[in-house]
Length: 304
Image (cartoon, rainbow, N blue to C red; front, side):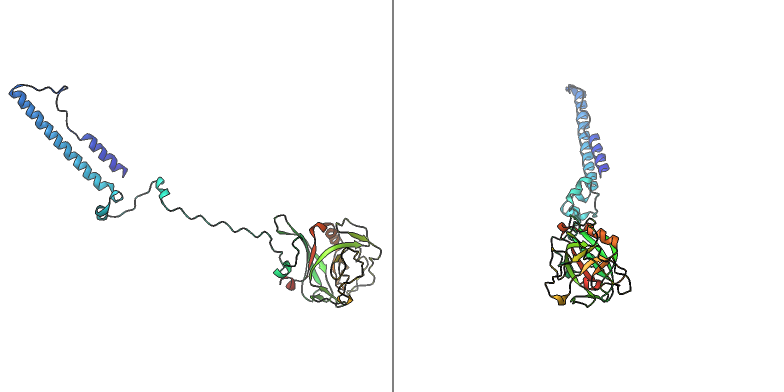
C-alpha cells in the first residue's frame, strides 16, 4: 500500500494552477491589454479546471488503492476481502499467546524405592537415616541392605547396597521365639556393641566379652566372630542399654536379641548379618541425631 500512497502524493504535488502573470500582477490598458487579460483569465480558468480534474483523478485512484481496511459500511462489503500484512507494532493488538503452565514441582519428600505407603508412614518424621533390609522372598534367607539418608531438601539418597543374610526360614509379621524367621517391620536403632573395640561408632557402643558366638551355622560354617560388631534392632528390648540386656518387654514368647551383626556365611536364627567391613561402615555412618531406623522384611511385604 505504501507505493500507491507515494504516487498519489506525487500527482497531487504536480497538479495545480500555472502562474497568473508577471511579478506584481499589474493590469495592461487598451483592447490588446484586455484581450491579453481575457486570454490570461481564460488560461487561469483552464489551469484551475485542469488542476481540479487532476485532484479528482488522484482522489479516485487513491480511493481504489487504499483497500478495504480503511473503508466502512457498504464500501468495504463491495470490495474483495483480504487480510493485510500487520506491521510489527500491530502485534500488541492481537490476543497474547497463553503462557505454558509452570512445571509441576517435585514432592519435597520423595519415596524410598521398595517401600510402600504403609511402611513409609511408619518412618518417624524426625528420622533422616533408614536402613532398608529387603529380602529376596518370604521364605528366603538372602537380603540386600542399603542405608538411605534424607537430604536437606527432603529427598532420600541411597548409599551402597550390601549383601546380607536373614533368618533361615525367611520373614514373618508375627515373630515368635525359635521360628527361625526375621521380624517384618520398622524398628529404631539405638545401641551398638561388640567383642572388639569401638571402630568409630556414633551410636553408644558397648564393648563386652559376652559378645561371643560359638558352634556352627545352618550350613555348617563357624559362628566365631559373628558378634565382633553388632547393632541392636529395637524389637522387644529396652532401648538405651547394651544389646546384651536380656529384658524382653513383650514377653519371652515374642523372642528377642534381634541384631545386625557380622555375617558368618549363612542364614541366621532371626538376625540380619553383613560382612565385617560393611558392618564397620554402617557403625560409622549411623548417627543418633538422625534417629535411624531399620525397615526390614521381604520385598513383597515392604512394598505394601
